[in-house]
Amino acid sequence: MKLRGIELRRVSMPLVSPFRTSFGTQTKRDILLLKAVTDDAEGWGECVALADPLYSSEYVDSQVDVLRRFLLPKLASPEGQAAIARSGAAAVAGLLHPFKGQRMAKAAVEMAILDAELRGLGRSFGRELGAVADRVPSGVSVGIYDSVPQLLTVVQGFLDAGYVRIKLKIEPGWDLVPVAAVRERFGADVPLQVDANTAYTLRDARHLAKLDEFDLLLIEQPLEEEDVLGHAALARQMATPICLDESIVSAQTAAAAIALDACQIVNIKPGRVGGYLEARRIHDLAAAHGLAVWCGGMLETGIGRAANVALAALPGFTLPGDISASDRFYQTDITEPIVMADGHIAVPAGPGLGVTPIPEVLDAVTTSAEWIPF
Ligand SMILES: [Mg+2]
Image 1 (cartoon, rainbow, N blue to C red):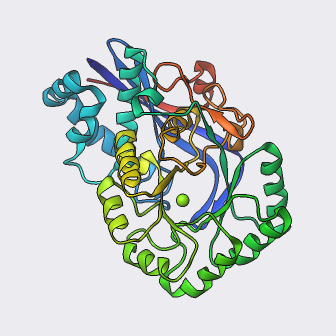
Image 2: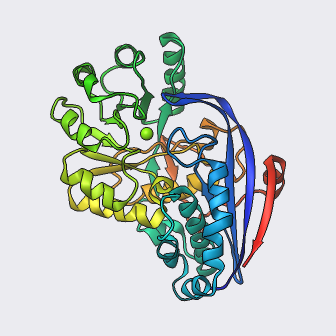
C-alpha cells in the first residue's frame, strides 16, 4: 500500500441539544477528520478529542499540532512509508510509539489508513476486527439537567425511541435523587447505569454505596483517572460493579487495573486507547479474564460511529454501548445517518467503514482543510 498523503479537515457540528457532564457543557462539536489517500482508495479517520482538555489531556488543536509536527512526518519518512507498504495500518502504532501519549491523534490516523487499506481490499471493518453480530444493541448517554422533571422527560423520549439501556451522567449533587427518580418512574426493568467522569474521591465511598439499592449495571469512572487503587478500594465498599473509562488508556493499563481488581467492566473507546487495533487487544484481554466490555462514545459523526458499531459487534461486548443513532446528537450527519431499528444498530457491511462523507454536507460544515503530501 502506497500512501500519497493525508488531509486534515476541521468540521463544526451543532448538537441537537446541549450535552452536560461533570466536566462541562458542550453545544457543538469541533471535530478533526483525517482522509488517507493511497494509490487504491481513500480512507477516513475521526479524532475524538474535544475542544478543551477536560475529558482527557488531549484537545483538538493539540492533536492537529502533533499530527503536523511529529506523527505525519514519521509516517511520511522512508522508514514509515516502507513499514506501511509492508504491513499497512498494522504498522502505524509501532511507528508512532516513540511519541508519548497523543492517543486520540494516533487512533485517528491509524483509523484513516486502516479504512483506506480495507476499502482497497473490499473488506469491512467488522470483518477485519472480528465482528460476530450483524447488529448491536443501542444504549444512550443522558446528560445532567437543571431539574429532575426535565431529566424524566428526556429519558421518556429515549425509551420511547427504543433505546435499550439508559446511562445517566452524575456528579456530586446530581446522583442519588435523579437515579431514584428514573427508577421510580420507569421501573426496575430498565437497564440503567451511571457515569461520573472522575467527579468523586474515595472519601465519597459511603455516599456512592447508596447507589447499590438501585440495581445499576455499573458505575463508570467515579474517581480520578490515575486513582486506580482508589477504584480498587471503592470496589470493596460497594456492590455496584465498577467500570473504568478514563483510567484505561492501553491494554497495559487495562491489565494492571484488572490485576488490582479496580474494575469489573471496561468501557472501550478506541480514541482513548490509541486505535481500533489496541481496542481489540483490550477486548481480548478482558475476555480472557472474564470481564465484560462495552463500547463508549465521544459524540462521533457517522465516521467514528460506524467504526464503533463494527467494534461493538465483537463477542466480548456483552453490554449495550453508548452507540446511539446519529440523530441523538446531530440533526444532519456528514455520512448517511446511522439509524436505530428495534433498539439496535446494523453493523455496516460495505468495504472499510461502510459509510462515506457526503461531499456537499461535509463541505457545508468544514471550517478548514489542509493537504499534507507524503
Ligand atoms: Mg465515561
